[in-house]
Image 1 (cartoon, rainbow, N blue to C red):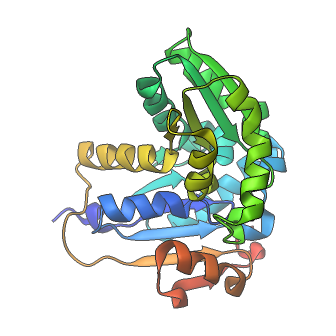
Image 2: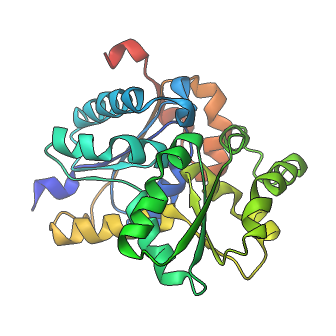
Length: 271
């Protein structure tokens, strides 16, 4: 028996958005153990500098390494844009992000070669998505907009509230005006707003969810490396730097999970 197969997969995000990736992974890879870290106390990541984001990423992956993870998913577009390269240089295990899988998916789906990207302020200003798209398919036109209120809306569990529709209308209008045919949800939090976004953009605009693309990429990597867990017991542990009681409600909605497994991690334990 390959002992590495039994080791957990590590995930982290600034908060609960990365649970969209976990949700897809649970469906696709039901026997894998999970260690999930939500850095709620220091969110939103979209307003942080690159140096801060690299520092947070290395801290958190270092914490997850102590849990004997076999692979780490940076389940956050902002942290992927800022620190994937550094993390890969720093740690001996495979580290995957959420940007490249979503880009490949979007390029396959677009027919008019007009792709929209909604993301956090950092991811938008960093230009990670347009850069990756142009690298693979330079003829494609990319239109971006950042949506600062979406993260707090998701963290509050207001996935389809009337005010969510109002805010989304405002953010999505410039992209509708550009007549895009494909829209990348460039923040894992946004996966939980798919219904609202789809209602506003209409059936002709295809949505690309990095959570789905990333889970498929994860399975491919685990299979190639011969460390995919197909049987046996599995375990899930969830950590937050915030207040567990504040995140429990949203976690319950998303995962219907055993809430006793959300553990508080004090920031000083990461230093």
